[in-house]
Amino acid sequence: MEVLFLGFLTFFTSVVAAIVGIGGGMMLIAILPSFLPTNALIPVHGLTQVSSNLSRAFFGRKDIEYSVVPKFLLGSFIGISFFAGILTLISLEYVPLFIGIYILLSLWSQKFNEKIKRYENYYIAGFFQTGLSMVVGATGPLTMTLLLKDFNDKDKVVATGALLMSLTHFLKVLVFIYFGFVFFDYIWIIISMICGAVFGSFVGTKARNLIDGKKFTIILKLLLTILAVKLIIEVALKFSII
Image (cartoon, rainbow, N blue to C red):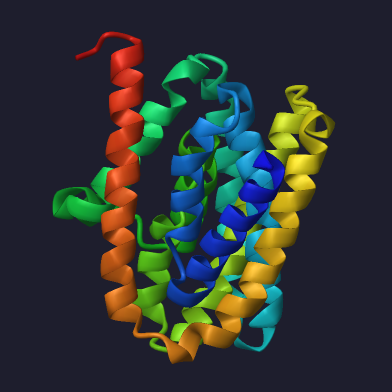
C-alpha cells in the first residue's frame, strides 16, 4: 500500500511541477521523510526527479532553449564536486531540517531570494543548484528565477528548467552511487514513483494552459509552508532543539 501511495504522491507532485514549473520536487522532498529512512531520502528523491524532470522536458522538447545547457552543466560539475566533499561532514539526521528551512526561505524571504538572484548567470546557477541539491534535494527555484528573467514564454521556462533540473538530479544520483548507496534496496518504491512521475508530467503538460497558474501557486505555497514547518518541528523535537 505504501508503494502505491508514493507512486500516486509522485504523480501529483509531477503534475504540479509540469503546470507551475516548480514546487513538485519541494513538495515531494517535504513528505518523503515520513516514508523513507534519512539516508535514502535525497538519493531516492533524486532518482525519481530525474524521471519527472526528464519526461517533462521531453513532452515540452520543442520549447527548450538548449543554448543555456553548456554553461549550466559546467557550473554543475564544479558544484557537485565541491558539495560532495561537504556531504561527508554533515549528519544526515539534520537533512530534513535543512530542507524545511530552505523551503520557508525560498517561499517567504525576499532578502533570501534577492541574494539568490545575485547569481544570475548559468555557470553560478549550475554550481549552486546542483551542489546544494546534495543537501536539500529540491533546488529548482535557483534556476527558475533566472529563466523567468531571460524568457517570457512560460512553456520555454518550464521545459528548459525541467532539462536543467534533470541534469542536476542525474549528477547527484551518480555521486550517491559512488558513495555506495544501493538503489536496488528500494526498487519497488522507485519503480512506482518513476511511473507516477512520468504520467504526472504528461498530464501536467496537457493541463498547463487549462489552469489558473497564479491561484494554483498560492495554494502550493501554503501547502509547502505547512510541510516545511512540520519537518522543522519534527527534527527540533527529536533533538530537543525546542
